[in-house]
Image (cartoon, rainbow, N blue to C red; front, top):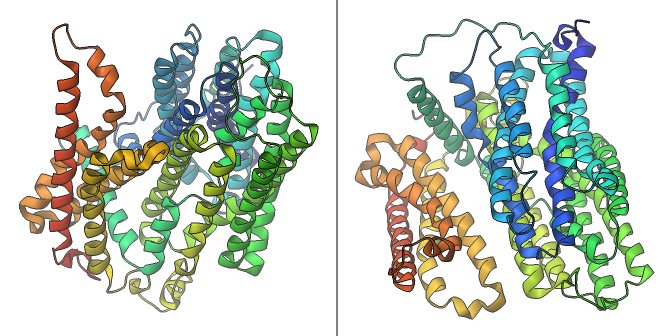
Amino acid sequence: MRLPNLLATKNGRLMAFFLLYVTEGIPLGFAATAVATRLRRLDVGPAEIGAFVGSFYLPWAFKWAFGPVIDVFSSERLGRRRGWILFTQVAMALTLLSTVMLDLPAQLGLFTIILLVHNTFGAMQDVAIDALACSTLQENERGVANGMMFAGATIGSMVGGSGVMFLSGYTGFQPTFFFVAACILAVTAFVVLPMQEAPGPVRERVAGSKLAQAGREMRVFAIDSFRSFLGSSGAFGGLLFALLPAGAMCLGLALQSNLAVELGMDDDQVAALNFYSSILGAAFCVLGGYLSDRWGRRRTLLVYMALMSVPVFYLMNELTRYGWIMPVSTTVANRPQVPAALLTAFWIATLAYSVFQGLMYGTRSAIMMDVTNPAVAATQFTAYMALMNLAISYSATWQGIAIEAWGYPTTMLVDGIFGLACLLVLPWLKRDSDAAAVEAGQSGSAAGFADALGPKRARRLATGLGLLCLAWVPSSIWSEVFGAGKPIVGTLFTVIFIASALFLLAGRAVLGDAGGRTARLGVWVAPLLILLYVRYYLDVIASWLPAGVDTASFVAGVNNTMLGVAVLAGVLLLQLGAQPWKQMEVGAR
């Protein structure tokens, strides 16, 4: 029997994108719920689990880089987007199956690396699916289709989380990898293979290397994003808003999975909690968007994000009351008895948090669209979404470290307070009258999305990042001052180094020859800043050295080299902060 081409009809298109987004949600639910829960049962510490979940979101923070590659390297025979979806789904299944024989937790490092590659294919698939949606969906279908896509991601998250947890009670954990891979390949076989993507417009033949063409498109992306982010107060506020956590986040990340295991919940109970949380989150996402349309996005978002801290503070208080402060090993003898009231409080807090997070989720995306310049909407909005994933990544990482250093209540207190920081940025997230007029098609100009302060913002950002890079030197020398919070400070500097590297790359693209030697050197320093992440693995790398090599001298030498990289980056950024940045002026090209 010949399977139908779902792209041929409206209902078929809605179903196709629903199912495609199911395959996006599966790996995220699998990692954040099923794998995180399993690791805690194996007595893996919260810090390692937090780093695992944090690394899983990293490819989504850089998915903007996949767009040019997918655009340039495509097959007309398989379909420009369909070919990439086929490839990435098969690659996702194969990378997942390659982990079946790994021994956890002994091979957690290798397991994390493979799942990182797995999720990189997932992020590439997301770019290809979104591109297919933009070229396939009719204008009057897009609203419903986006709702269906979000619902599909939620269902996928439940399949990868709740589904795996329920199934593992019957088959054990390792066989569930086959189940997850089979779910992905089922969509490949019954949806993607029969799909017939309509040919796109004839494209100009790429002159020279396709890889070079992809690089040129990335350069254009960098320039458009940089100009858009710093071009107006609303867009710059959106940049800060995207980098800050979207309210209190701990009950939506690994902390929740850790607590569920420690409070004695079995896999079926964890799966049920994940199921109900997902349903509530999806339903209230729709309600939150509806209310924001009626009462204003900034006003409703302020309420939603403030409410996200309430269940966090409530559970923090209950944990303190019953003395559940530090993580409790899952294998230790004579584990403390879990009060029934504490477990009830955990359920109440988690479900309430799902309601408030759901209210926030759709509204946050909508407000980012409000400050996005229509002329570069795809570029700017994609960059905002990528930065939000970076915020999820670093939040999961620092919270795992903080749980082991400070305990659950203190971590939740910091998360609840830090999550309110984004409310300070909300007043900036608005369009001026010119911008609204442009979007409405009325009289106005592009100046509504670009004011005269673009050069000043670029100079200040460069100077701020430069000073922060230089601050790594004293913080490294006197690192013991931070005590148990030392790894958290390290996570903060990782974010600073990534932001500085992106600024150096984008700054060179925007300034061009006017940037001189400083901008040119910045392009070479940027990758070195990102490579500073290896400081966490120096001891492992040192263990690979041949016999006779002084490992202490090796580690000390590498540490000094990394300090030099940070100092060089700081100096370059300060020099860029002294540039006039005339390229950021309104109308400049």
